[in-house]
Length: 140
Image (cartoon, rainbow, N blue to C red):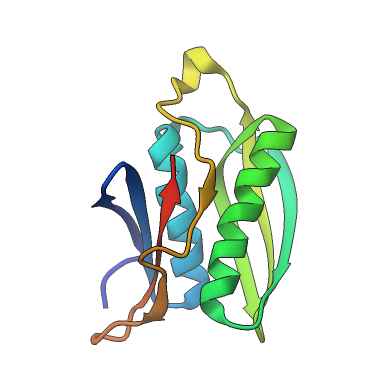
C-alpha cells in the first residue's frame, strides 16, 4: 500500500478531485486537500484557525459530497482557506476539524472559486490493492 495522497483528474470545464488513503478518513482528508489545491497551493495555508464540521448521510458517497460541500460553505462564510484536516467517520457520521487561515489574495493567489461538489464521477470505495479512494467532480 502506498502513502495517502491526492490528485486531480480532468472533467470538461470542471475539475475532478480524488483522495487516496489506507482508511476512508485518510481518503476524505486527501480529497479535501485536492479540492483546496484547485484554489491555491495548500502548503501556503497556515493552520491558525480551526473549524468543527459534522455531516451525516445514508451512505459513504453522499457523505463524501456533504463533507466537501460543508468545507466549501465554511470557507465562504468564514472567508478562510483550509489546509489541514482531521476526519473521523462512524456509521456514515462524519466529524472533522479543519485548520486554515483568512484568505489573503496576495499570499494565496486563488485561481478559482469552487461552487460545489457534485455527484459526477462520484466514488467512495476500496481499490483492487485495498486503498480507499474518494472522488468526485467539483463545480468551478
